[in-house]
Image 1 (tube, rainbow, N blue to C red):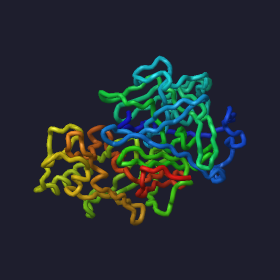
Image 2 (cartoon, rainbow, N blue to C red):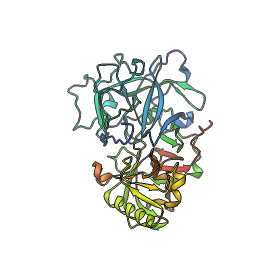
Image 3 (tube, rainbow, N blue to C red):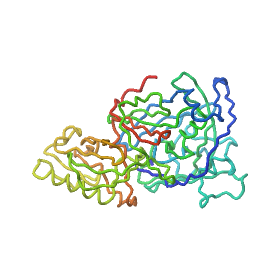
Image 4 (cartoon, one colour):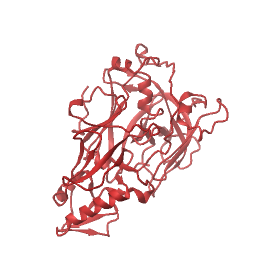
Length: 421
């Protein structure tokens, strides 16, 4: 599930109140233990963030991942980053169906630390209609399904997450996550990662849990480098807000993913007539998906604009549905970008706010030396009217999901260099 995924478990409607009494072993500072009763204003007192380097790329890998330590003593887990889902899960060291082939040291072994059904976070994760619990003392099971037909089934647990913050503190809060013992991966290849870190705005996400403990503000962001890698951050003290373009998040309380809009599609500075697009920003999707109307409109505009240019559509390259072949193989998108026009998404609810998209933001060069179109038809994969902004359009930008102020922001950035505290 390292490519295109969407968590279908959106109905996290119950109020989550974390009343965790955390005792830190060994090197964790007891003086800095989280005060879970403090309100969000307390996060300002900490004024800190946690920053993690990323690995991966849009093509050919199709995912970005982060290394996270869990447990005591800590073990490292490489997880896909996914702003389109809430629950973080890792593969269980248990009889496991569909688990990727990993040494046992990269699997998580539960230690009688499963959540019970009566735990507020378990209640928050399950909608009343899907609650599998019979009694509050039952173990809290979970199941997440993604739009690419991938899934994970397991039990929810909690454990220490050793974190280094930019204010110099090192803490190990106990956070809830999934221990997956039944995974399904679409496609012929399983990813090398051992799970998913869910960064959505629902109650079960890591950033929501940290915020309720008063350790960080309820802000998460990422910077994906077009050269591969980048960084992920939890908290807001490293963000230079003056350079950021902002658009409001959707106010739909049933949506725990980061959606915005409506937006208008612009081609080469001119309106396409495609308006009212609701958009979901999803780092768990490698490519962008438009609904059928928007997809057909942009494909026709691109094809018509390429007419007469020394670049021809080819059916031989199956890397993506639409690819073009030049007179000689392309080595990078930079070699082909002069043949293509810029796009933009103009947000109706924000004055003069556009997400500018150069050809590098919607094209890849395949291993065959052809240039391919990184915008796909979401209607063909069951997304219906949903429009997903995937990694390809988020490259070399700092993306900020500000749950405190219910807004999504972006700014050009050098994603090859981790920010300094």
